Length: 265
Image (cartoon, rainbow, N blue to C red; front, top):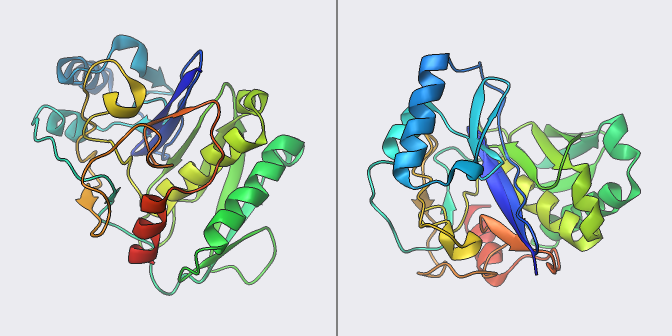
């Protein structure tokens, strides 16, 4: 089965397992200077990230193919304080005043029937948990809005909450549709997880779900706070928020994901 990767961008990115790996997750930030780019890449290599897991796009450096890495975050990755808990959140979360989050596909996203079906299923995943907010596709009466957009390749990307609001964009690779609606559902649900404040469950050791060298994403400048009640060890396939996922994913939350979200919201 192939394996794909998830990545973060001052936010986060996702990947898949099978014959290849996919990634996706990020925020909109100003382009880093050439000097900063060089140091970030150097720090990532020193921290153990393989060269093919590091992506330079639009002046930003990404790892896991869905997470933007700042200079500060890359320096923190060199502080190898590996933890053992499974579920983590960012410092910032979605405020209690946010009760309805509307996911609005752009025209390119809406034109892809597989991506649209996966989005509806991902929204249903969250609404089944009885959280402090509900999600809906489009509509009115929104407390916050997330734009669903397409990108090339497979996987996805998103960012983390700020100012009490979820991150405003998720990007889903059109190539992910090749693996079927359940895999796309997994990617969309994963990226929405980042948008409401979930980190990769194996952020401290991406080899757990991705294989290869043991790499640590660090706090990424947004925090990596353990969520009480979640397992003490991450396992491959044990969480929808793992850095990498397989091509046979069902797209459904694992029990630890449900515990984490219901604890936070």
